[in-house]
Length: 246
Image 1: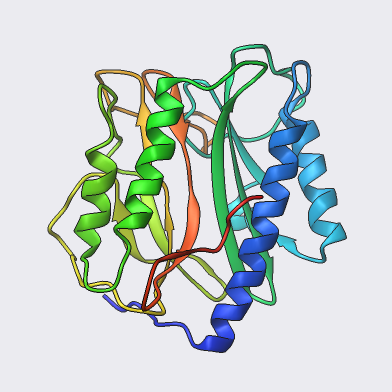
Image 2: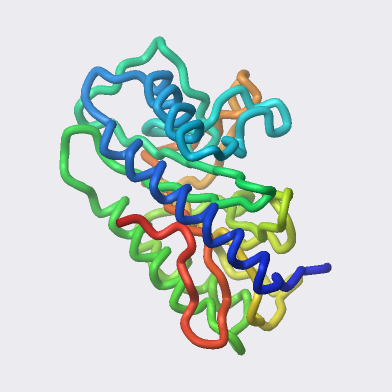
């Protein structure tokens, strides 16, 4: 398994794309309201990307038809925006954003509740992400990141077939796959210059089984879902969150 260490010039490119991805996601999260459609959110994403002269990474990726993923309630990931369903109070919605600038990619996601405060499910997922990032340090192993996520799942389940990933220039999903449950397979020591997307996913169910809907993308789980993601850089010191939101 080859994992590319980024040059300083590449790191600056990923910093810029990560910053923009965080900005766009912040705008989208603040736009979520009762009655808005996910198609409306997709239009906002397209407009914000155009204003910043970046390309929506997901649009056309293996045929994906939208600029963002919008996953509601029992949809874990890869939900396709549409203009048929209007968001209702109490809906869980995950917005996943990717932007590309000069080949450099920022990838980030967040789950919120429409019209209400957060829940234990979402808080646990967010905390798992923060704990995993804390473990993404030089000298630690990839399995330490996965353990940090798994340790925070509480009463929730974790789908084993979905997780985080490496990111390279012009390559959204690169080595390594970052499982949200510990796996000794393909473990390695973290080194400066590695860039990863870490993304815990929790399901409020005793069953972690998922299935892909007939649209070929939306992943259906057995309970309410939460999914949080940041793109990070491994440095000589603390990990740097490239997609941090203000």
